[in-house]
Amino acid sequence: GENVEQHPSTLSVQEGDSAVIKCTYSDSASNYFPWYKQELGKRPQLIIDIRSNVGEKKDQRIAVTLNKTAKHFSLHITETQPEDSAVYFCAASDPYSSASKIIFGSGTRLSIRP
Amino acid sequence: GAVVSQHPSRVICKSGTSVKIECRSLDFQATTMFWYRQFPKQSLMLMATSNEGSKATYEQGVEKDKFLINHASLTLSTLTVTSAHPEDSSFYICSTSPAYASGGGKTPLASTDTQYFGPGTRLTVL
Image 1 (cartoon, chains in turn brown, green):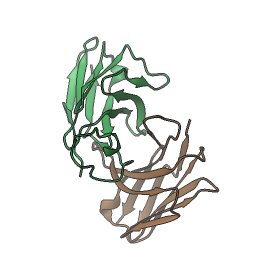
Image 2 (spheres, each protein chain N blue to C red):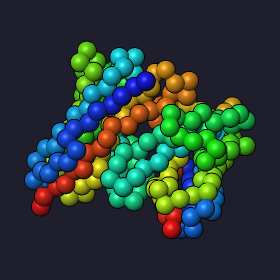
Image 3 (cartoon, chains in turn cyan, brown):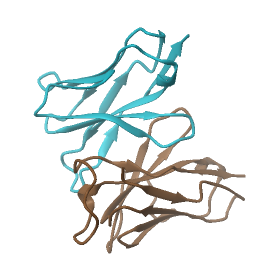
């Protein structure tokens, strides 16, 4: 089955700077890659997603890139703000699951320093 | 956006008792729901896939007799933790997707792969 690796596990950046989180996946047949933001004690919230027919997608300060050849995808947050502090999870679809379940990375705890 | 609810939000129980958690899809009828468990400072681990009208599919290492799943209607899936022990204390979250909406439900709200999560249930077993 699919395996998703994520790094770094923790990331601290100065407010206003950019943050980058990277993930790799194992199965080249995966075709859907969502990113979730989770605040303490709350549900994961989808912040952006990308499909394998697209190399890059941007939504205001958030962008995601996908390199299918290398099986890498990354989340970029620019002009970081204190409210960006949270745990971020990447995920990939499991192409062999009849229910198209998604597999999560291990998470990155992002802290924004004032 | 799509709304998935869970009940209860928090539960504290004694060791050996059983606890039932409900997951409801409010905006569409869902033939498939997913149940996750999340330990503190860890990722979401898929426990099982709940299928309306049929048996759930469990992930490797998850005891199906301990974590009973019932998906008797298109809007409700339940997870029962039987004979709970302190090591079962965790955050349990369900999810579903418009991709799994059955015919006759409301219009899907987003791309078919988007998973919407319930608010989670924090289980503490004493």
